[in-house]
Length: 223
Image (cartoon, rainbow, N blue to C red):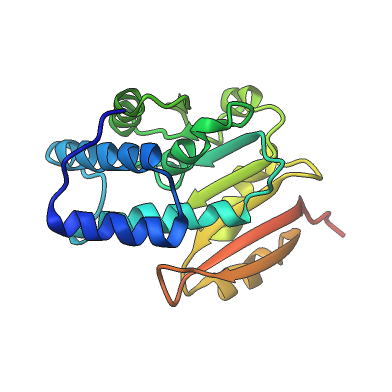
């Protein structure tokens, strides 16, 4: 892709992102194109909070990119549920562009947001599957076979998230979920109905945020 012109402010944000995550030039250019697409579509669709429009690199791009350190190196089939404006799924798809063996699927039920995701992916020239359907649909689940990693950001409390994601889980599947300061309470609530292992990692973009890495998820059997 061709280089993109950026403002002085955005240039400093780009430099900080590169310093923290080490992404190469081509992927950075795709993120610049992605940001432009968000700004253009935001006029018609409420993709992100107005308060974060001037903080896209940190609040959205970096917040999503930090998940990569927690995704297994063997991941080949990553599904992002409730993708919205593409966080973290579309950012992950940019990162894995040079890893053709890894397939990224975004599930977003809002038709307008799904259209935004498709157009943004086209403009960035990245391979990604986008399903404009509900994750709880049996038809959706039947299309998502062999999932080894599930991601989600600000989608639902863990108890509800587990209900939606569990049909995709096998004994080897890993969930990598961006959570806020209520994660401890969410874990306690989820333990009433679910058996799982969880590792919590600090967020690099939010001092109160956590990354919850979930393994061996399964419903508890009734006594």
